[in-house]
Image (cartoon, rainbow, N blue to C red):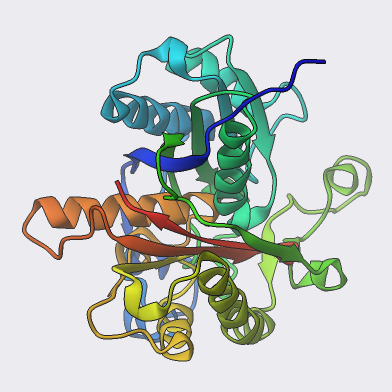
Amino acid sequence: MAPREGAAHTRIMSVGACRPDPVVTNADICATIDSTDEWIRERSGIESRRMAPSDVSMIDMAADAGRDALARSGLAAEEIGAVLLATSTHLRPTPSAAAVVAHRVGVAPAAAMDVAAGCAGFCHAVALGSDLVKGGTTRHVLVIGAEKLSLFLDPTDRSTAFLFADGAGAVVIGPSDRPQIGPTVWGSDGSQADVITTRSSWMQYREEPGASWPFVTMQGQSVFRWAVFAMAKAAQAALDASGVSAADLTAFVPHQANLRIIEALGKKLRLPDHVVVARDVVTAGNTSAASVPLAIDALLTAQAAGGPRVSGGLALLIGFGAGLSYAAQVVQLP
């Protein structure tokens, strides 16, 4: 067989986003749980979040973000060879959400597949997309992270009702003449699968009398300890694998799980003051696989409005969550 030649290096060419309406405040959330705006902010740093209406699906948001990223890339639709959609909230076992999204974005017959790795899904998909381009399978990949977590939130659960939200973010990955996406450090720990899970399975919901809808449940303290201590090591390993230090970074874009976790990770990594830390969680909530691309988009949007310049700088990305799964890489922002 003839060998297939791919790109020597890869890069993120563009970023797209979809932030649905309406904006849901902490006061709105407190209408169904025994809590206060002050308690929510102290516990999570979240002030508001987006929750899509019933007639807007996860696929709708993914397609909107994908179209946005494609338009900003300057590529024609036929130049996209694959679509990777990171999500945990697709309600159908088949067909893949990615295939439908590829059609809606207008890039079919591109290959399309879903990536299910919880909140780490987007960083997993970036790794896969980069390797597809390096391997010569395709020259350009549309990577999307999209979630409609509001479908899986128990509005009366005081531990989760204020955390999760909806949205989608996307990037286009293509070839580069120099390294702009570093090696990925990733892994999983299925022994802790019950730390972030759902209250029941689809089969239990179907067959067991009284079984609840599969609402998300989480052991908050266990997640916090794992995220801060284990993920600081993974983040440092990603820096080491890329041959850079924290001082070389322009931005730190972790999964927007909780502001307390984000700030604790920054301290563990000893980030210099010049490193811009993404804090999109404050107004976007935890959007799982969508959180990292949405946070990148927020930094670029802030730059356009006169905020710190991040374009062209190195950013450390890390996603972590259900599985327990994680993935981290250093990238150059477009």
